[in-house]
Image 1 (cartoon, rainbow, N blue to C red):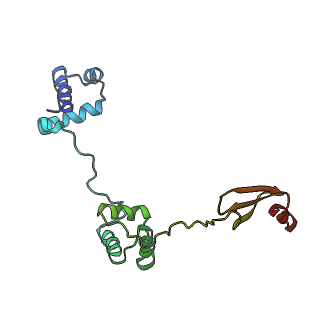
Image 2 (image 1 turned 180 degrees about the vertical axis):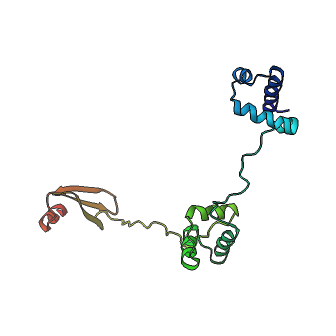
Image 3 (image 1 turned 180 degrees about the horizontal axis):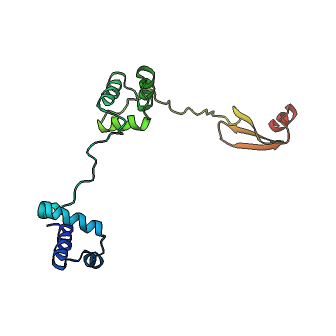
Length: 179
């Protein structure tokens, strides 16, 4: 017998012996409605009535996705191999059904849909590199703040970086930086 069932049985037996529900409630630290509930269940079903019942609802009337929507989502995923966001737009466009991406993702996870195959792979990073210092220099200018321009030059061989800040971005400042 579970600990909770034994405790509830003790409450009911104490109530039967004393005949005073207020005394039992004060002594056991429970409310009268709680004692009344377990007393009625014990009277109707015996010890089996003292078992805790499931609190799960019998139905979910506000559930957004029914079996027909699930089937539609899985069909779109199977035929076109789309992700949750693209499935959302297809449902809205073709079937006038508005579901959140999270709800669609839950359906896909629940049915253990295979992960999407990525066809686009980012190419490896190609770094410019020269064998002689100064053969190629990459140069850039950037506005840092009003009246502040940063000139940057990076040598492709040594990777030395040279920075200088000017008040204006002009041709004369650029030539000065290059010198």
